[in-house]
Image 1 (tube, rainbow, N blue to C red):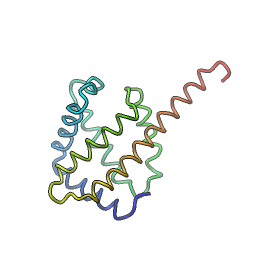
Image 2: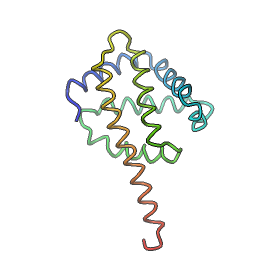
Image 3: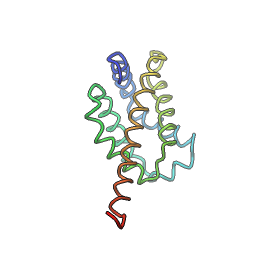
Length: 149
């Protein structure tokens, strides 16, 4: 569970980073593909729509951090969708690292270790929930395609 102080750090740093939304999101994808060039093939050549979806998903998650229960279902759906694109748990770890690095650059000198820790914790929770959604969907698909179902 995130503390109120962690939620405040996440929300305030996100607001600061999103003041340059295009720069944050552009920096994220540039950094992600630099760290793992093989990931580029999982995305369309025009990343504009994906960039908007990422910004929207981040905004939703950050806004609802004080009520994590409301995030479970949308994150399960998102996790199942990403699994269909080939996302693996290792990808979530990389995305977490890259996003935190990009947030730190976007926020600048006001960024602290407490920001990094709060974001790490929140992003790990989000990633775990998305992976659970992918596993549930896969399990349900296997169950319905089983001859005994």
